Image 1 (cartoon, helix red, strand yellow):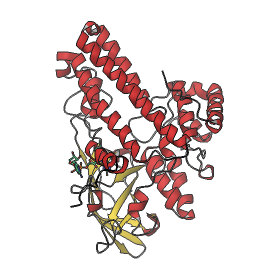
Image 2 (cartoon, rainbow, N blue to C red):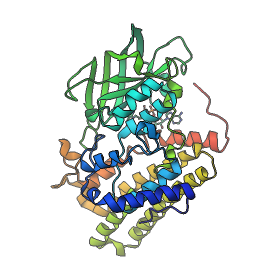
Image 3 (spheres, rainbow, N blue to C red):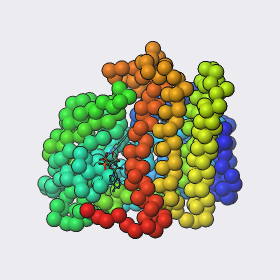
Image 4 (cartoon, rainbow, N blue to C red):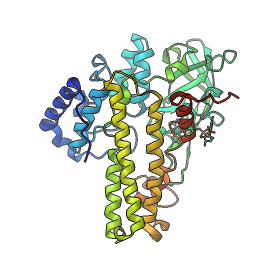
Length: 405
Ligand SMILES: Cc1cc2nc3c(=O)[nH]c(=O)nc-3n(C[C@H](O)[C@H](O)[C@H](O)COP(=O)(O)OP(=O)(O)OC[C@H]3O[C@@H](n4cnc5c(N)ncnc54)[C@H](O)[C@@H]3O)c2cc1C
């Protein structure tokens, strides 16, 4: 496996060395760890990583992180991945909410919310998208009205991933409808306060949405006077747009050295399947598998380019849209290739359903069928493929801006 990045400089080399040393002493426990489906990794391995500060690598040390730069985190990740160990992330609480609090929160907010993310008490799902606000997020209509020392929230969110595992919703709400559409938005942490994912509580009703994979990974979120303390508004009222744009400046380096690894593993499995089925003698199939290999290497080089930008002291910036386009469009093509390797078997449901399908869907897709169906969403979430092209056109190539509506 080609997870080890080239020389990333002295600080990253030192971070990698301490990870290697730690893995040699403690890594055995991680061999048994099975990554969970959801945002609540648990067990002895996770506790050990937490205790020794191998979770939330980019967070400052005083809040339980390791204070690593993107480069150092990339080097550490490469060590764990190279040793065949899974170092879990704590969902969007770690990657989105934590950084927003670190950059924009008050000292009291940092002291209250960050430890709760780290110890798993607060697990976040994201309430940004609405039925009429997806790519054009600033047109969101969910209202937040001040009532004493609370915000009273009413509206509808949609595509709320990992809702069943979450205890908190981080939401963008419109607190000043008279202000400019970007200025009137606030970023608020809303308690879900519930014992069951399916029982409305705190004025919040989460209704699961069933996907083509058969599973129900996300929900429609209806808020009818949901309450959040004003203390839970991050960055102050009306500053939500700015807060929502924050990830730690150096955070993007984290997975850059290893982002291709899951595709590399999946492709190796597909090649083995193609070989078992006698398809590797077929010239067209050989060509397609070789194409897939090339794409995975391009994804790897894309990650290395991000690291190179960081080494030079720059920011990967909008060029990371190129990486998103590359991996998400490859993922879809890979799903189609997997179906062609399966041939007629791709059409029947499986006696061994995928982990996701066992959540109780109307049919039972196999692992490969789930990969194919799930891959269709890669070019939608986190900014659609079309939006990525707009970003590249305008901010990388300097083409004229899209006229605003
Ligand atoms: C698997 C998955 C998980 C998700 N999880 C969450 C979550 O947890 N929380 C959350 O808030 N949201 C979540 N989303 C929602 C996601 O952020 C939106 O789907 C995404 O922003 C696109 O918005 P939309 O679906 O409303 O499509 P629209 O914005 O309506 O777009 C429809 C089509 O028009 C195209 N389009 C739109 N604007 C332009 C333009 N200016 N130029 C060119 N083409 C354009 C789009 O590319 C797309 O093809 C998730 C989505 C998916 C698929």
